[in-house]
Image 1 (cartoon, one colour):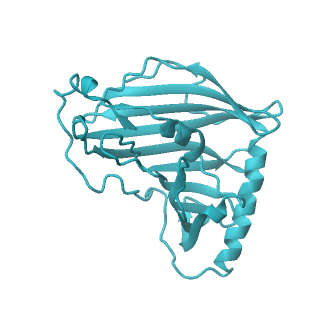
Image 2 (cartoon, rainbow, N blue to C red):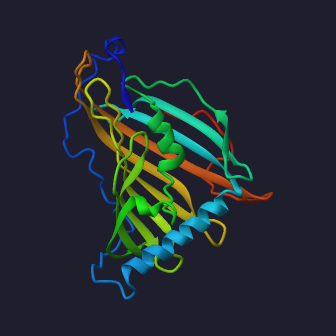
Image 3 (cartoon, helix red, strand yellow):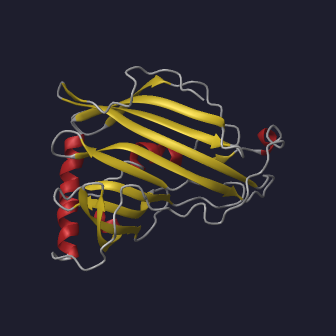
Length: 279
């Protein structure tokens, strides 16, 4: 998210500033439904597990190329009273052609009411590619993947790995955090962390909150992303004519209506229609 310029800042000077929290950008691990972490070495060598789940992720990504789905993205500014003060909302239908190239059709897009930040190209990239993170054999060489332990997620027995980019190249986005991999299916079921890098240059700051993405087995074989939630207090330091400001941000992305070759696998969220969101 990029901070709005000085002229637009005049419109929001009356807003109370949020208290600075230096830890607001630190990924927080999920809690509900997560059991005790067993840090004992796995029975199977960790490197073997990593190779197998990366191959499984590659197979999933190829399978995903045969699916269409609906993506509903909501980004909200939250005030001191924990109320929504501005919102970006977009509903897209996502279609993949035979080469895996994606096309998108906007279904619903009301007026953007964000006042303190603007949506940056990196935000759109993260919504489209980053939050539904897939760690394939082709991409895993870009990361240091280390075994953390074994943990139950609801009823799913999972291996837990930390994931860090080895090198950050210009104009590329990377995931940094932890993944939970189904110990039987060897696919990612939970992703928790951040998309990096942030741009911290004064006057050009582009910051992003930590997030968690959950997957669900919707076709009997593969685990598909179904929900992402991110929240954080973004501290914009200001400079170069910009005012320092803390912005409490909350975002959710839902992935639903997965369809393959005319068949339909639906993730219901309580509404069959796309309607104007309630504040």
